[in-house]
Length: 209
Length: 233
Image (cartoon, rainbow over all chains, first blue to last red; front, side, top):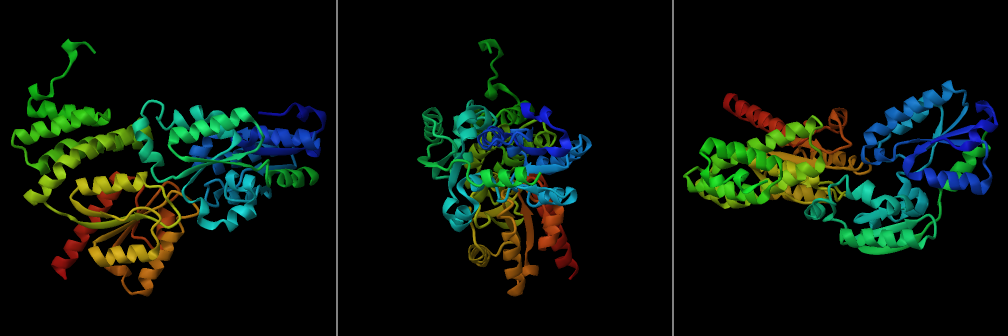
């Protein structure tokens, strides 16, 4: 995905954000809210959420491609996201920054708040706007739960609650999230977070150009 | 499928039935596996032979196709569910008939982690291979591991983690065992999606096992070494 704004300035004056497909909509919303018309967005597939081992090598290639296109300012729109430090190695190799934190659930909630909660979220299944929107195609089908609901206890038997961290106030998404929690047999909780730490992270990247 | 095509398990000879059970395991057909297990037992098969020739061999094929990207997690879980139902029938019979034992294992998911799909698969395959498996569950702290080791005196300690944030805890457990002077008394196997061989070495484990089949083979290898050392020692 590439924003329509990219054609307005030469790559050297723009910021290329290479992000996770799960946060594409949110990055574009922040760009629009804050008028970052010099920021463009490329995304790696959201499916890498299920295959974090693919993130670092694909990011390495994506950054190299952006450099070839002439981008000097590049920002990685991922937290560590299960790469176990591999993404940081890629960032260090290319001299670029990423969003702080272990994963998007943390930076939406606010990394400090998440870290202070320590083990409070051990048995929590997080839902974001993306997951509320795509629960069927992104979770239910790939896990085979649409065809074999009897697998639910094997996947989610140790979870106790579903916490919807909402980026936007959208009754339809909230209904989806509640439905997902019901399907999983988990206690449902709603918390509006907005974009959390994503906004300052993108702002800093945008203003560095 | 029409009635004509329906396979009547009881009408198959032993070889055909075992082959059919491999197919049924592959397809995750729990009730068929229960039926096939009971038929073989009824024909005088030992529980050990049913376990190894029908169930374990079937799961071995599933494991190979999972590794090769032909099967995916949901299919493996369905197969595991089917095998589990067969093992539920066999477990008490195996205990009665004194099936051969290769060794024993304590296995648990580390502190801060509640993911247990991999651990459960390893536990099941280890049990199928002839190990006494003591599964101590999820979110296990160092005291939990040490208490289980003390109680069960296993040959092997298995630790599992799915999260990059929890896998370093394995080193806490191993370092504590070193401090207590008990590290070398046990074979330590580690596994989990974000781990790799380098990580296993770095934390001082004996081996990293990338899947349940490798865990079984590695455990057998270490048990053979142990027996050889005892024989020559």
